[in-house]
Length: 263
Image (cartoon, rainbow, N blue to C red; front, side):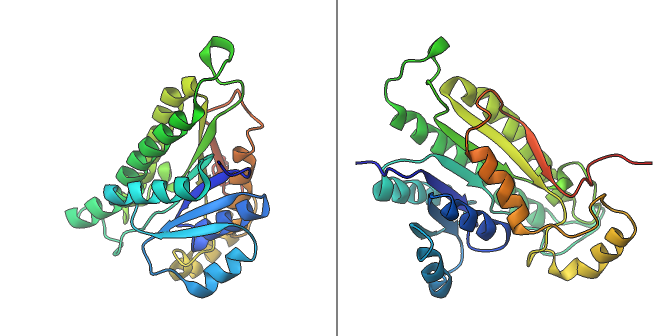
């Protein structure tokens, strides 16, 4: 029997923004399956299991063979998937001017940030469609949204950083992938959104804290503070609630207003 509670897949759900999303979804009553490359963190998982039903699958979103193990683990445990959060991502190992950047770094970042989520979405969407069964709805649509897919990208989808071009390109690609999947999956009753964080305090940004402290002081964003994983998680939870069933392909920016052009 499928679980009575909704089920979410959160890639990279063990740290940073992903952990914030995992915790928020557990608080909302979701069961959560995490995909992450590191060895299962026993202490963290014990803490999360006190908050709800959660499993950990070790693997990489960049490896397509890991997608099957991940999806199968969730279906075997709960018999359903309601939400996919494509959150896992990496920055370049070395910030290099695009005149000097290496192909290996480009391939690594694009593989994890764009190619992997693209094909994981394909697999999860097919699983969602398969679990739907026969439905009756207007114009062939399910009577209510079948599932939701949220791609976590970055303000770098539009903001240029010439010392990490591969990262910007990967996030811009996530934006187009969101639109592609939104159009393709709308007739299937699956909603697709992009959440675009600004400057968020995580281990990924710890090394540039002084830089962004100075930028915030200089007016980088109308809200002059760092964002938190909980800020991003709040947007994901709202989108997952299916309260906008006639909306898909939209971008929600979580950046304190830094996306607003100002003079």
